[in-house]
Image 1 (spheres, each protein chain N blue to C red):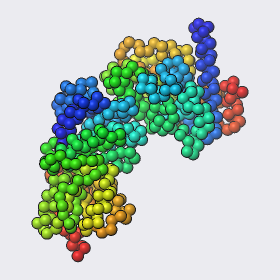
Image 2 (image 1 turned 180 degrees about the horizontal axis):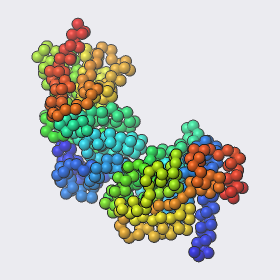
Image 3 (image 1 turned 90 degrees about the vertical axis):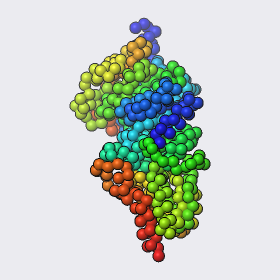
Image 4 (image 1 turned 30 degrees about the vertical axis):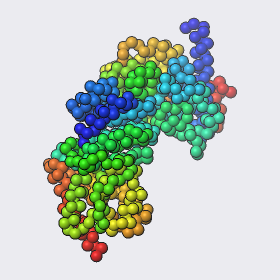
Length: 309
Length: 277
């Protein structure tokens, strides 16, 4: 995802002189091409995320389109008040890019995990949150984010994420994309966990449960019309995210359910439970530990479906 | 100083007294706090808005304007009164200050009135905002200057020192930070709560051109402003030694006026001292 991001940003910045890239001292070599093409619009801001975030706001006040880039936890939580006041409160078109979201950097320890970012950024007025499901969608999300005037948080994985879309999907901020049709259950996935969600649908099929899968790349604003449509068609809606269950994508969907528009479906949320991942282990291991595997998800869904019988 | 300059300074001092009178009245009328903090930075605002900055009240959004950011947002009344006196906002708008539904809250909101560049109130944001604006000027090849007014207590914030380390690395000579060094923060002496001294040497060590000045001496402030940019290629910091509550004898250097609201009687007394009655 980060390579797709760097390539697309470079391509866009060559055309659009308003784009400025601010990096928090990461991305060694990743932005070489960008720097060659736009040397006056790249700033390595050092390990000083608060300053980087407010500077981006100052630039946006003057009509530029700054993009801040560093590891998710440092680009969101570390500078949260700067995001709240200088970006969201001023309603400025700054794009905040977090790389290594969720458990992408599982092996680096909980200092580098980011399973809370959706929760606190979702609570900020004016903020839009997009978690693309694959590299192709990263490019589309970046392009779309630059075409509008809102602050956007782009939640990325790291590198090597598999393609979900084999061709360019119709991408609009705030509009989900149906990836697979099904009639019993609807799985809503966001961000890098999407391959697991698709595999869970295959697993459910083997168990005789037909699943629709929807790519909910935009967490805020939530695609409420699509939720209304889905919840009228299936018996169970399942959210899957690589983020804490408290306050994340599942919570956003649950808030919508609480407003009462779902006539039929019930909701099941899958994500990271209320605990830190405190041991050594890579992303796959951490996902397995928290039951975020195709089998783990299918088991929970099957159990839930049996409760209905 | 020439006689002409003396007349000019007299006139500016008169403006300063009038602004101070407005601050006392605004605080009394709606119970807005931070009067002492607003009074200590009035002379810097007068020097900037009447002598230094390239601004036009008729064109508050001119992309080429100089920018002022009140990073110590709790002195909002000083900014509002200055903008009214300088013609950016109508005088009668000040009457609404801190009233329900007014655009003028106790800390300035985003573009809440013409001439207000940024929403502030949480300390330690303004210098980085100013830095971003200064860099934008460089990227867009515009020659404006950016002025950021901070408090001494604000220098407790780590983010100030992130910005302090970054600006000299980019040789941002279009950025001027002013520190209203009134020796107090909310609940005590600033040099006792944190090791703020030696402030000038700290900024110099970070790579800034640092000046110390009596922050109530308009002639001295204007002289420094006239010497900028100083050709060093460094960002500038002006450490202005000030007195909290300046201009009203019974408020000067008394930290109770960080939160106290003047009574009707005290307003009269203050205005007499300011030669406004």
